[in-house]
Image 1 (cartoon, helix red, strand yellow):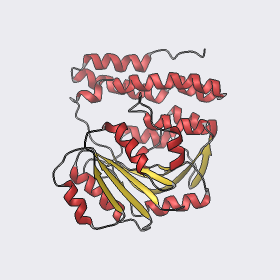
Image 2 (cartoon, helix red, strand yellow):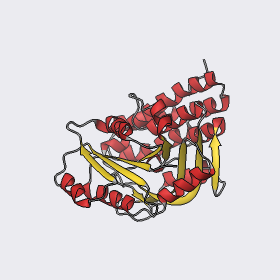
Image 3 (tube, helix red, strand yellow):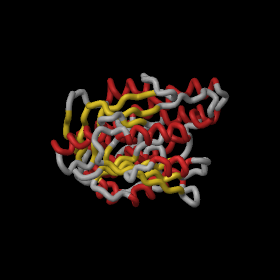
Image 4 (cartoon, one colour):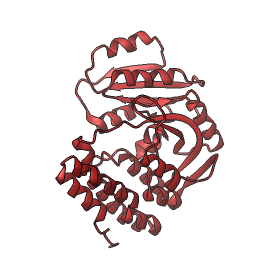
Length: 300
């Protein structure tokens, strides 16, 4: 493995972004390159990067806002090395992240994806244990300890039953991502779609439980419209049903069945209905309930 491209599509909180950058600078393995693409206009940010004085760090600011998917595409176009990670600007790399990725790839050269061990933290950096993350760990994620190479329909079924991945922590083989790309019609479920596409193309994933990354899950106000609008579940349901048809055509009937059921997404939507009703988001509650209880489409 050569130098690891750490790509940081940035927009938002300056202090959290700076903490993310410092965590990259603190890696025990120094063979990395950090590229930050700023999609905002926060004052003082270019000056802060200029003062870092580390030739491995590159910073650029977009002249116009590209949005989430547009900025990810720009970051992908700037990658120069065989492997990359799209790091979240509010997440933290523990000092052993790069070393852990290198060790996994030394054991399984050529893998397209590496999901390392993740610790979930809250908005102030303290360990967090939400219901969503407990479900990922206890119900959906592989139970084997250590390092494992996974792929094919086995992994597709596992992820479609419940997506236990943490996208900002995943290391990707650059040419694999470029060959598949990001979809214009997806936002919330873009990460799962990318993985399923790569699995159908014959790629494999290394799952390594070595904890080396902190994923920040922010608290959301119960009155926030975005939490209870239900639109993300509408997108997810559309993806799952369309994906099921493609998986049937691909000859993966178990994965197609898991996609049609998308049980974990239904349960998640259902758990948000009471909160939406308490917040007076009646349309959102109806959308959530519809996505939680609607009958899955049957194979064509």
